[in-house]
Length: 117
Image 1 (cartoon, rainbow, N blue to C red):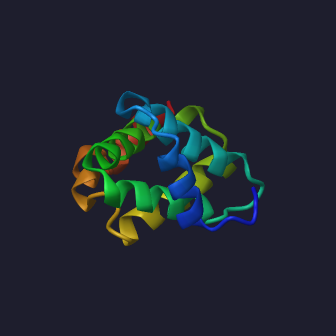
Image 2 (cartoon, rainbow, N blue to C red; image 1 turned 45 degrees about the vertical axis):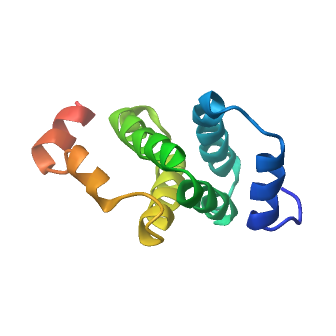
């Protein structure tokens, strides 16, 4: 990671004029970059926040990413689950993604235990 702040990174990426169909790859890159760090750094969630607030399409893709990660959480290492939780909680707290996305996640004990078996 460089010394650029999140706004500068956003502007640099936007200046590359990446086609909208590659936004899903950008979502994945931001999430994966966050997960590769040894310790949680909110830099990636701040960049993602700017993208989500500037594009409804990107916001939707990020919400879909949360749902997909939740579906496969049983395959992810504990530290990476924690990093994902911090990443997406930052996005929720800043209203970068909708809180309504939590309706799509089965958050009851019976479903969670079934997924672990």
